[in-house]
Amino acid sequence: MPEANNQNKAAAGKKSQSAASRWPDISGIPTTPVAPSGGPPAIATDEEEAIAGIPTTPIAPTGSRPVAPLPSYPVFTFPLPDFPVFPEFPTPSLPQTTYYGQVRFLNASTNGINLDAYIDGREFFSGSTFATVSTYLNVSDGFHTVTIRRSNGQIYYQQTMAFVAGEKVTLVILDSASGVTLAKVSDMGCTNIPSGYGCLRVANMSYSGSSYDVRTFQNQIAFGGVGYKEVTSYKQAAAGNHTFFVTGAQLSVSSFNELPIIILSAVIGGTCGGCGVSNPLLTYSVNVQAGKAYTSYIIGNPWSNLYQVFTLED
Image (cartoon, rainbow, N blue to C red):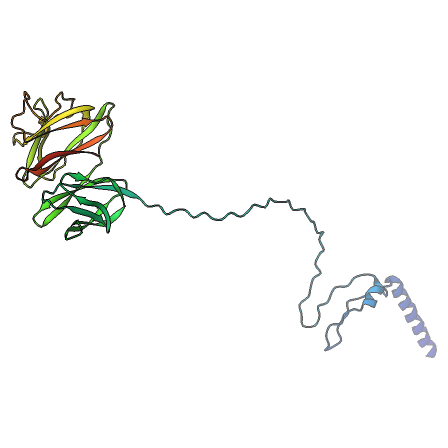
């Protein structure tokens, strides 16, 4: 029996040597550390890694997530261009634009009292009497309070009025039962004037109930049936001296009888000897200049000895 056991041991040794010869020697290759039972993962030491020369799989520290090694990329640097440095300029403050219209006053009151005109407390017309006119002055766009008062005394009129930027107006002071009132006349509308012509129109600012025809030397009607506070449209008039005659309005006159364009009249003066107009109430002349506009205001009344036609360039 002892001899049989020895034979078995010898056979096992030969079998072990035969198996070892079939597998390569891996004793020099490190393996991933394995944590002992119940303990944290084991981390290979630097010495172990140095022995093998082959990197092992990194193991996350206790209580944290695995961290993959980041690849390293080359860092490129580019030179930045030199940009010009501009000086700082202060922001300009733009002026606040105010838009203006223009206004003037015409005194057509026959009460014999010197009158002052104000807009928002600013004096526009001082010590005015019948048939006097102020110059055009600027007034800002919007609503303004207009006041007419006796010079350094009683207020006769005070109202809020609208003014429009770019518009020229004439405010006519008229008699009224309470003292005076105002009529607003726009001085716009003379457009498309042909060469050698100007514009003419008529405004009746005399007294309530009045109505007039304005005729030429040849008794042609230039403006017919002009009622109180009425302002006619502009008509083209040839440049030169024109004489007109004011008569009471005839009911039979219509706009179809009016001259569409006023041609040059030959009469200059204050009488109507030899003309075709009988018994004119008033006679007046206008020297029309090419490209300009005029308004002839009939003002006053027959019983005040203040009765005339007052022509203004607009």
